[in-house]
Image (cartoon, rainbow, N blue to C red; front, side, top):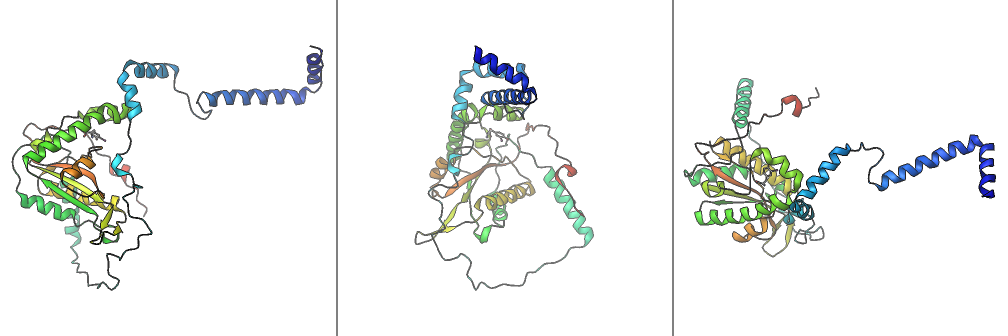
Length: 319
Ligand code: IYR
């Protein structure tokens, strides 16, 4: 007791040191306490009501808890470091011969007037594109599908590796098998993998794991990226930028579908890649990127009333 009394008197004598020191200690202790509670001092805490209702929501459904545990953000088949990737130490002959001939590039300039008209007309055509989920069963000739895929194959690619493979399915038996597989995985995606936020974010689109369009549409196109090229002797040649190259090719594919007067849905069924690859006897280094039903919209087809961003929201011009 006597010790504390002496200490207190000294603190009073040296108040100009002890007051700021004790204040600093107090602030430090408060800060540490906040950190422990997981709230950094720079973040604005959510209102207490909000937190309470969120906790209640989470408690309400047991499924939301198992959903949290099983959330898979990335497709398991997409691991960029998967063992089956090509490695830097595998030195293989380049796909482009060193002495490849460079030939004259023919290019015919359009008149300015025609450039304006064509760019505007193409924009208008593409602006009419909508992701369609209700398909007519009317057939589409295979030659049109072949031209569409030819267009996709004109995409630029890293070191001209053309790291894509398309599968066009018309056979009703296969379409049925694809639908069964996709629905089975999508049910898990919706209830577990996608998580509460994701399902809430897409709710307005009105989708579910039931995918009638997969058996209604006359064609299903599957787009695979090839993470490397397998040479005849088993060596692997790196496919540079296989992801972006195949994505660009997917964009051209969608533009070609639209230009042909058909519709599609750009779908990416999570975790269906390996099973679809096996279904069509494709090798392990081919990873599914897109699955697109292609055909005509059904007569009673609806689409959500979305607006596109204005030009100034997507374009910054420095001139
Ligand atoms: N793949 C699911 C869920 C879904 C996800 C996104 I991102 C969408 O824009 C729409 C749906 C499905 O196709 O139903």
